Length: 330
Image: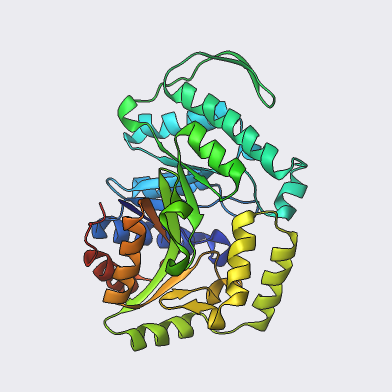
């Protein structure tokens, strides 16, 4: 079981403050035994490779999980980023392969591909990328990429080969994850809706936030203080829901509307409903949250990605809940 955190969006910080924030988050989590940090990408955010390098320079073993979007660079360019960072620092990355994005971003980039073909393109892209990292000479006349006799220099140390992740719930995403042997990340449903059939794929990961305290009442007080009702945010969420072709966004948004107070036990969707984050939260006592996490572990989820952290004290509470799980996070 691998546990990751999430880098904060750069748009919420000033230039100097953001570097300090990323460095602090990376150090807190490395000291707590967390594997690494998911670094998002879209048209409004800092280059994730630059953020990854900053995290590498300020830690000793932390693994940046870099969101990699084919529209932003050729597979050779991405492979060179990975091999160059490995060559300079002797450090490993992980890759979250991204098929789509915000509608406005895709429009700005002139991308008119439909949902399923974007995953076909991502498969082709990642196959070239990984073949280069494995030291192969690549020739391909594909539907989306054409290369001939392509090689990577400097080569990547095999010990630094990146883990692969793909995000989504659609059949197209499932097919891509299976083809690539990647861990498929998704948002999860309330525990009562989970069963072995619902998570029959191998190599699964899940993303959520955690707010936990020694007792449930204090945890819920903290959660509601962190994520108060926001009418403007709710309207923005509905607008985003109306324009998104993401299956998981549609499903999680529908669940947020259906659940009373957007809550099912420790499972809470109110932050999504108010457009404050993009994943569910687990809220409750250490024991309640640990029990919920154990449900995912028992169903075979192999990677857990926490939402953007709110400070070292909150991280300490979160790790207390993980410590109670039967299977430790490594």
